[in-house]
Amino acid sequence: MPIRVLPPEVARRIAAGEVVERPASVIKELVENSLDAGATRIAVEVLEGGLRLMRVSDNGCGIDAAELGLAFRRHATSKLAADDLAAVATLGFRGEALPSIAAVSEVEAVSRPEGAQSGAMARLEAGELREVRTVAAPRGTTIAVRDLFRRQPARLKFLRSPSAEAGQVATVVSHYALAYPEVAFSLTVDGRETFATTGSGSRREALAGVYGAAVAAAMLEVTDRGDDYSLDALVGAPSVSRASRAYVTVFINRRWVRSRSLAFAVEEAYRGLLQTGRFPIAVVDLRLPASEVDVNVHPAKAEVRLRDERRVFALVQRPVRAALAGLAPPPFSEPVPWARPPVSVSPRAALIVTGAEAAAAEQETSEDVARQAPLPARIPLLRPLGQAGTTYLIAEGPAGLYLIDQHAAHERVLFERVRRESGDGPPPLQGLLAPVVLELTPQQEALLAALSGPMRQHGFEVEAFGPGGRNRGAAGYLLRAVPAVMRADVDPARAFIEVLDLLTREDGPADPRDRVAASIACHAAVRAGQTLSLDEMRDLLRLLEECELAQSCPHGRPTMLHLSADELARRFARK
Image 1 (cartoon, rainbow, N blue to C red):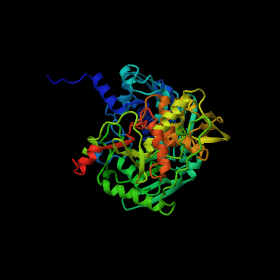
Image 2: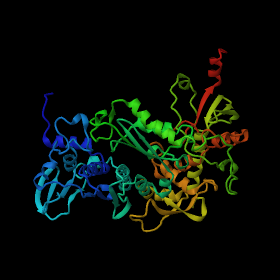
Image 3: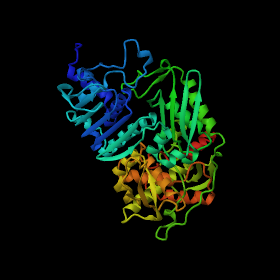
Image 4: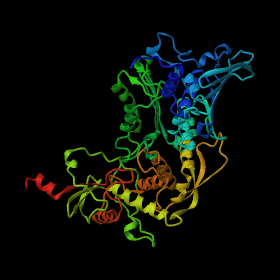
């Protein structure tokens, strides 16, 4: 096949696909442009998750009328000279964002630089400049993006619901609000302001606007300085841990990046301070020489390459660990109190314990596991022998030896119970003596809006509380009831937040009702690391034997390993 040069319209769509994955990608690029322009106020507005409209307004330096159309040409940028690529100091530098956005939407840009008597408006459709004219405008730039992917219906199929896309947008805006506390951010979703920061310069105050005042008050300040680096961080005390890794935010030179190694550095600092399955809240701002960081490795600038990754890992882990030292004793094993079952529920269907999400079971790949006998959907009668590592039950059955993951097994038991009870009429729930005020992040609000029906069907009663607005922080909901499977002595607000966090997991059932049921079960299930008595082991095994799909938890992880009698005999050279 001969080599051909791609037509310009095809090349534009390919470039757009590298930069614009979803509405949140557009918001990220536009917010970064506003920050590079020196804005101190940035307002973001979205309608229908951004598919109908995205508008970003700032009070930055603005664009001259003669250059406004040029800003939408590929590789046109004011942020990079020919010899600056080895030390990029701005958030944007490729000159790809605006033309890529314009290639898959309709764009209207209005801008006026300081000192100009009037502004200019440029309108583009499908990447083509249609109009440039003089307009009245305040200082700064406003870019409105409409009908994203309207001409690319195949791209629309891969997007989630409007509320889910709005949650992704909220994630982007909240992260940059934390990175730039001196900038006043606001986010309006479908006409309602979901959060706002004051731009006072206090990262703790910005964090209160995103996560709520209670979380902000429990954060520890971490500061470290060296000859060629600086670290400023807010890290949560172990008492405000979460059930998801999504609350660890890392900035390098004020650029929000996805860095597994640095996120792991934060987690390592908490080693021994958090129970299994718990993760910290942390905002880490690391400054390094630009020559030590290569930002030119990802089309959307979401990842970076570090010249000395091991050193940078230590620059983060050690100061955070030092700040946490002595704050809390390490977690300890505790007996599991089994709650008394309701009268209408059989004893075997009423195993209720306190718990949080356990660490994901490691996928077994050894040849031993490959030789396991296939497990039936229902397991045989098992006799408990003991507990290994306060995590796995050892049991004997008619066909050999079984190792049971106590968290995964109990998760399966509770999942089938919650799902069964939700289909038998009104869900069993525990009404709270007094409603509890919830502090939800914008992402959690979007998730609640998307799954309010299933949450209600499974026993959560939540209602909007107060008008919201700039000073609302992250509160705005009242929790009036929780599912009956939750223990009465568990903090209901914490339980609700953890269930929302668990709903963000990529694994698990596709059906929204089953996803909620799986998250409730994961929260309420016995934890890894808890000591069980023989009676408690026996009760758990009896409940597991009654499950329809006992061999796996709702998220697809195995509940048990089986070593057959023949395999044991072969291993001990008996046959």
